[in-house]
Amino acid sequence: MDIFNKARIHWACRRGMRELDISIMPFFEHEYDTLSDSDKQVFVRLLECDDPDLFNWLMNHGSPDDTDLQRMVALIQTRNKERGPVAI
Image (cartoon, rainbow, N blue to C red; front, top):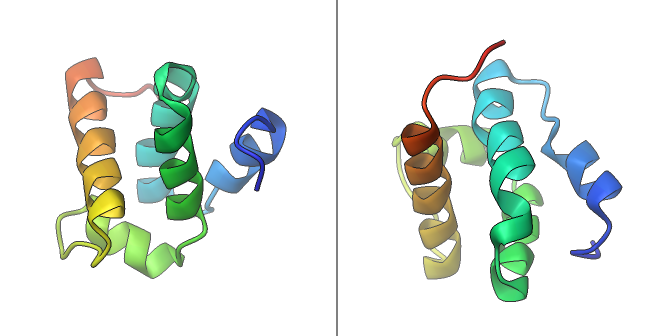
């Protein structure tokens, strides 16, 4: 997926699982534009992972084997925590 095709990435952020949606969507909406191109590529790679894996990683029930994906999961968690609760 092209890291500059924000409409397609936005669509890929919609997971259909509430817990994932409230983790991934706010990060994309508030942080994506501030990421470096290499971090955007890692974020897109993360979106290509299966929902059960994403859920486990983002809910701290394990971590990806890939260190770049580990770093991105941690960044999503940190930035979301800093931003505070999301209105649903």
